[in-house]
Structure formats: structure tokens, C-alpha cells
Length: 473
Image 1: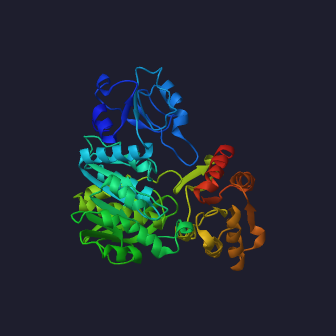
Image 2: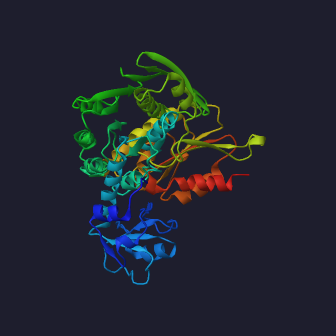
Image 3: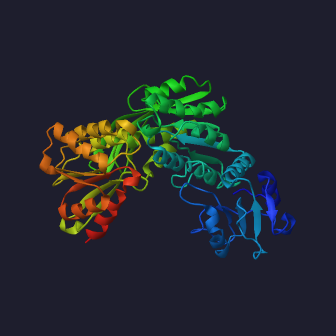
């Protein structure tokens, strides 16, 4: 974090020092943590509250682990026997975290790009950061910290040496992006797509697009908007922005367009990129049409920030798929030809993302069998059965040998598959991921391919972990 004094932070937060005066404390304000389990000696612990936890319950633990500073709101905090620590009382701890983050961003004052969209935010952010780090000292959101608490924590990473920041913004209700934009104040924004995600909280895709459009309300006209030209709703949103616009696509005309992509099994994907009239040739050690959109977005940012064609191609060659978002694992006795190919896309799922992945799986061949483990897609509201039925109908196009579904509404995936002629005896349903994992451990054989995908709370990652553990030898 950029250097701040304790007094400056206390003033910015309108905090009330307890136990000691600010003038008695060291001048430098420490890094911040909200997790007493991982806090490091000397850090500041902010006792934020969540739906299922209250940080004030863990203040004592944080102090015992060496927290030097506590920001709190509840009077129950006992600071009487910690004379060597700083206690700052505020009205609301979450608001204090956000105010501090805004102050840090303002003091840092350099270029920040916000990245949002229904699908692919994290992968796009990591791809963008990988390309731009060749030229700049880059900082990005850690993991998927993209909500009202995660975005401030991301901003608190900003340090004087950083030249560019890429911050991921998420939302599942109207108004959330507007609030996040007011905290991080980006110079530019990147929108990946609009898809049927969080429909439980929106009436339709147009309402989701309107919520994404909140980004443009706070984006300065001197900034830049990077957007997916293959998404008609984003194209309409972009038309309302009077600042500089940079489009990317696979299908429609755009400033950056991916062309002629080819899969070499599961190990490599090659393609060409038309970057404002200049043709680039590149390849990556992973496959999937959805990744091409992430790459196109990253190239759009790289070109705009002045990277050369050689730098862009070199950077593309260094791209890696984030954990649980399409990584391929070979599990088992490789030397005996008995390995299982496991495609781990277990982090999350939604109708559009699943459709693209199933299309990709349909292009694979050379395996003994193709198995699909598909978990329920959450937050789809009243249309959940419909979307799961449609997913099941798409399964038939994969030429799959076995379909395993997990979660209540995932039953509709099996029903949709049967409606399109998929044999019912090749469908197995489980209410939980652990039961599905135990079944698959026994079912999988040499040379099989398995796709694992589902919404985060369905815990499809447990299937991956169990298979890797029990079939590793």
C-alpha cells in the first residue's frame, strides 16, 4: 500500500482513537487484513461484518497474532490491556474500508482499468495483466476479490511503484457497479459480455445489461471503453459512450478480431489476430473458444497501451488458465497409457459459458470415452428449469458416453438430454458432489475424458480433488 500515516488515516476515516493518542503511534500505517486466520504480524485488522460473520468476534484473535492496529465499530471491543496497539473506532467498518480504499486510489493517482462482465472477468484480467506486465509494473485484483469488500482490498494493494492497475468488478444486483465505480474511479473500463447470470435478481438480460451500463455513468469521457463487439447489448451500450472505444470480437467487425482458430487436441490452440489491420499469429497451450474472447480483450488493451506485435505475441505465449477455469489435468499412470484426462472448469457455470464449453468438447476425439459431470447452475430464478433443459439438449451434440448431473435442478439437464435421444441408462444423477465423485472414481477408465463444470456453491471442485487423490497412481 502507498505510504500513509496513522494520523492521516484516522482523519480520513473520521475515526476516534482509543487507548492511546495518534501522536503516540508509529507514523506509517500498515497493510490491511479482514481475516484473523491469515493476518500477519504488524497488519491492521478491520472488523467488517458479513451475512454469516462479525469481524468483531475475532479482534482478540487478531491481536494475539500480532495485529498492530484495529479498526472497529462495536463498543464490545476491549482495548484496555493492549497498550501497545492502535484502536480506531468508526461508525461502520465496511464503509471505513471503502473510504480508505478510495483515499489510497486517489493518492496513487495513476491509470486504473476496471474489468467487468457476466463471464470471464477473472481470466480476462489475468490475461490482460500478463500481457501488460511486459512493459509496465502491473498490479491486479487478487483471486476474484470483486465485491464491495473485495474491491477495496484490491485497491489497498496499490503502491508507488505500480504503473497500471487492473481491478475486477462484480455484481449481482442493480446499483452495485455504480457504487464500486465510485470507490475505484477507473480511467478506463473493459466489458466482456452480458449473459444469463444472476437472473434470480433481474427480470431479463436487458436488465442485466442496464446494470452493466452503470459503469459508463462513472467512466470519464477522457477514458477508454473496451467491449465485446459480438455482444449486441454491449454494442448498444458502447454507442452511448462518447469517449474512446476499442472493440474486440471473433465474428463481427472490430478493432481487434481473432481469426482462423484451430485446436490441436486439448494441448494447443493456434489462431490469427487482426489488430487494427496488422495480422498476428499466435498459439497458447490450452483450448476453448471462450478463451479466445479473453485473449482478444487482452490484446485490445495491449495495443491501446502501446505494446509492439512481438511483445503481444510473446505475452500470449505466456498465458496460463486460472485454477478451476479450464485447466487440464492428466491423472493416473501415464507411462502405462492409463491416464485420465480431466478438464477442470469447476469454478462456476451459467448457460452461455456451459454452451461454449460443450461446443468445444464436441470437437474433441481420440478418447476411450467422453464423460460429463455437470452441476446445477444457480441464481437463474424461475427460468432455471428451462435453462437446464436447454443445456441437456446441447449435451447430445458432444458425442458423450456418460452424463453425470449434480444438484436439484441439474436433473433437468438429464431430462433435456433424453428429449434429444440421449440414452437414459447413460445418465446418473446425484444430489451432492461427493457422491458423484465416489461414483466417478469407480466409473472412470483408461483413456477417458471427463469435463467437470458447475456453479461454485455446488462444489464440483470436490469431484476434481477426489479423483486426483484416488486415481493418482
